[in-house]
Image 1 (cartoon, rainbow, N blue to C red):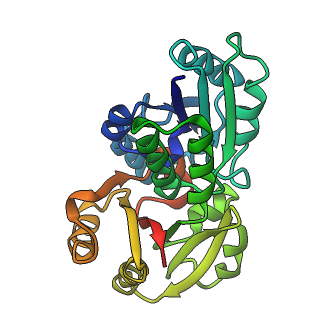
Image 2 (tube, rainbow, N blue to C red):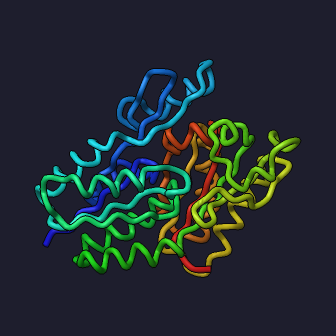
Length: 279
């Protein structure tokens, strides 16, 4: 039986990696006023951040229409008898619910399992990549499901910002609300805990926030996968990769861009490190 994996675009998996591993990506929508763009398809990352920083309209995001999920399932089912769908945290988006609802309306009756990763960005992406590698190596559907659930607890992320303004506007600030007020312009470091945004610390400079990301990655005793992401500060991310190569092979560190949909909530100067491993 052929197993295929579907994921939402907020996993931030580089297109080349998704293609190599046979991962199907469903784009989530980003809106500027009445204009609707599919994440990574109708709007490039560079175009998005230019509109975000220079435009007057604040972007919003939306789950794809139910029909998009149904059509994707039916298309993938043409070559797969078993489909594993992995979504970003249900506490941050209704994507999981839409993905689940769509399983009841497919024309082709393949076996479909939908998992709420309780993660986002490349923390979600690394879990998906690990599962896709296992499937490519011959893992069964049940083995893929079990591996995904196991790795959800082994994936962690730290994100450094220069402002919480975008999270505040987008309503996704979660427990990081404790950082609001006078600290909107400091450098907060956030993570995900139980599927929602959670505050870690607040640093007084960008350099110290970046150092926190470095120390976070260095504390792992075993690293299976690692990723570094940025939005508009590629040089900064590349320097961090160079430092982290002392801990983990540089050629195995995924370099990814924070997707437009996630960028609408985190802003243009986000820098993050995601790790799949053991502390």
